[in-house]
Each structure stands twice: as C-alpha cells, then as structure tokens.
Image (cartoon, rainbow, N blue to C red; front, side):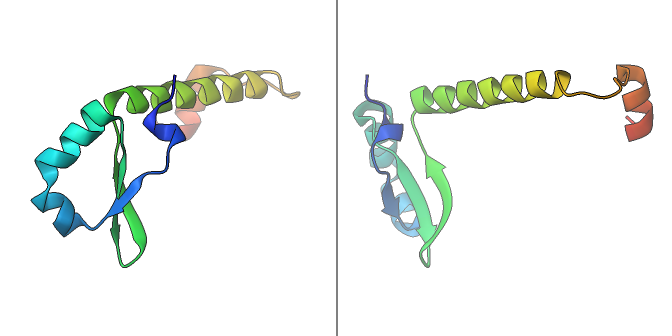
Length: 90
C-alpha cells in the first residue's frame, strides 16, 4: 500500500493554498497527495491525509515505546514514579 508519505509533497505558498483550499483538501483526502506550505523557501506546515497522520502517530508511539524499554533496561538505580514526580515538581 502506497501512502502520501512515500511520495514527495507539493510545495505551495500559504496565499495560494488559501485560494485553493477546497481543492487541496480534496487532493489530500481523496488523491493521497500531501502539501507543504512554504514561505521564502522555508517549510512552515504540512497538510497530510488522516491515513498518513495516523501512520505518523503510530510510528511516534512505537519509537516512544522502544525508548521506554531502553531506559528501563539501562543499568543504575531505579527511581519510583512518586520520587520522580516530586523531583520534577509535578
């Protein structure tokens, strides 16, 4: 299955995106395209499909889980959740 993430996004200036907003939304939702809003060559934001957003969120969750397991398996003294909250002031 190919998603918009595997294709290059289309760069567009925010003013042009504003003028063509409905068309862009349709292209993202149904055409599986993605857009990057750019100003003076700098990427400001992206418009991606819900499918791609969910995929990005799943990837982030997977990386967070892997990091948590790595941290859990590190040598050293364990700190209780209560003590950590106290130290962080939360």
